[in-house]
Image (tube, rainbow, N blue to C red; front, top):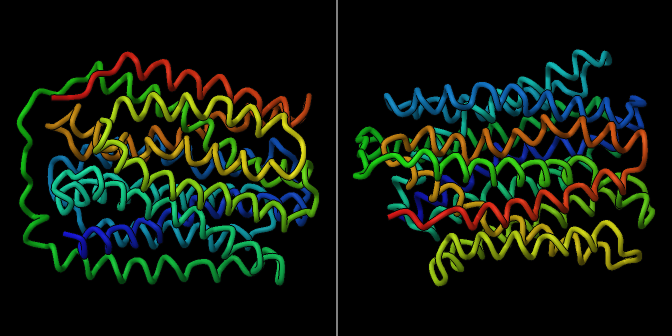
Length: 372
């Protein structure tokens, strides 16, 4: 089980690195192409809107029949979109390239979540390792993007297709080794609890807006607060995503000890003052509060997946696609609103709205009960 879930985690990292590439490219799109807050928010929207729309479709399809071949194909598509993002000079070409990457991400998550549940036996810790692969991918994005694009400009984005090719090869190996097991679709016992799943989705939407908002603007905000330009921005993104990976790993262990719902409520409650301090407290403490925010917001991440699948035991693919994809990526739809607030007032005021959303996530958690 450990080897299989490890391979799935590596594949998850290789596809989610492309979700992290979009915010990592934002400072360069501003500097090299002269895009404003609203324009770069539109690029983030392109990468998430199509994903949000089509993800439930892929979830329904994977509930009906095995689509393991779709996983490596989706990964390659996600990488191709980012590779093309810096090639076109026109805004609409950049927008379409980001949308293509989002389509690949959307196609990946439902079937990958189903396979991860299968190979982990539904273990909270196992699913946390699979989920942390995505966090690692996010964290690696600025490490890959910042030095590469700083050295050669946006024309070097085609090099960023390499992780997709490597990940597709690794995942194809994992699929072949689990072919017999993944062909058997075990239907879990129990009745689908749609009201609880809708409440869980509301939590995820709030979390998504916070996470995507921070991912999109934290590099720019770090430059304003700490100085240092794109280098400081890349550091802030690395802290955000790497701390998120740590939080995801903690989530599985805390849930095993204290329960998923209790862990979820507490984590979001901690995130409220952490975000407030991140936005308003001056000085080098910025990076400490950023790390605390990322850990608190990420502890429930893998728990959302297992809760969603347990709330909808008859629609595991749909639940996985929604919790890993739709409810996560839908935050990109709200990002242009944050961009508009930032342009007409300040980036600090725009980010301060995220405090209330973290509070909403914690409060809605009190309307959830642990599934049987």
